[in-house]
Image 1 (cartoon, rainbow, N blue to C red):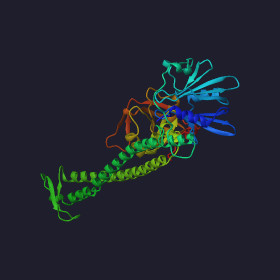
Image 2 (image 1 turned 90 degrees about the vertical axis):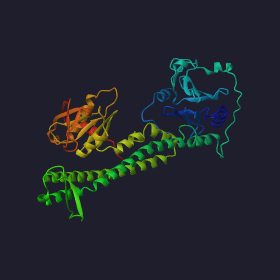
Image 3 (image 1 turned 45 degrees about the vertical axis):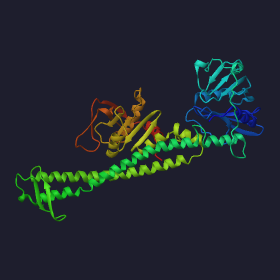
Image 4 (image 1 turned 135 degrees about the horizontal axis):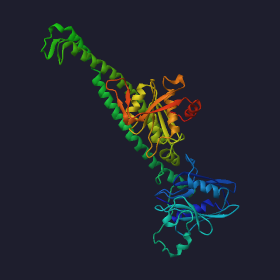
Length: 474
């Protein structure tokens, strides 16, 4: 629920900001902006939110997170209003439009805060009503640079509302500003803690559920592979009874000297070939059993990390900070989605601008990346004629791979290969969709097609820069 006009008047009456100087402007997200002001020996932080069902203006005592990158409107406000003095702060009738008049050493600006749930905006004009910029540009309504905005001129033609508005009765002994700050932080609007925590739970619920389901499937497969020893026993029993097996026998019935009793062993080929087939099946399932158990342990560790991350986010008490974490990234610039993906991904990951480079350091990591973390349009690089890493560049829709990024990936591929000591070498590169797995070959072995060649000379400076771009898995 947004503030009504009577609540806005009460907030302005408590704030008494006329004579204050604007010191800092912080736009946390595209719909939340804050002004740090100082006057009468006090510093206040005014929060303006244009969030649907949560449009408001009030003083906040909660930390306001900075954005990951500068936002256009905030940069404009900083260039015009920083160090300006507030000469006026008034609501225009009962229209939920607040007008701030800000004077700088050179000029006077009019700042309109329109706190309408379905058409909220912050608009900066000069004294003539010419729009200098708007938080949400809307050319159809003249709310863009060079447009005209003067809501006072149309107020007389608007019929007054017959609806009766009252100030909300929020329990507590604090000022109304403080009550509103706490109310919206806990339960009001789309940036309330309650709503944001529901988003976090929804995000983690699906991932945790899928991970639990994957662990259960692995455990079911583990139970099947637990019987691998039986294939070795079948091979031993066949070889121990070669003289008793006739050419046309479809099974061997013999005493089971491993487990007692009589056993019936199917025969689909010659006895020695059949014994070797059972031995081969035994080796395959024994190897598979080790991999399954290792995957179960990795999945359990990932599940524990995911549950810990969820607990960490749900314990956050600042809604603006939690909103920033979900939408734009945490202190490391990574969103919740990115952190979950980065924790799960094996190998090394590097963020170079908008590009993500992934390095598999051995056959196990190469195989895991190929199976679960890359797609057909992603680019694969590998040192020619040398064993070593697979390096992948994640595809970005509508963009080609820049040469600088190719050289980054090429340096990584050569550095993490057995050709590192040469200082230079040739590499294959091709989209993942043109890789063909070698049937019954070693893990992660692929044959590239449509491949191109890249010659790389190891660049120590480039590798040092990449090290600073490495994503740490906390």
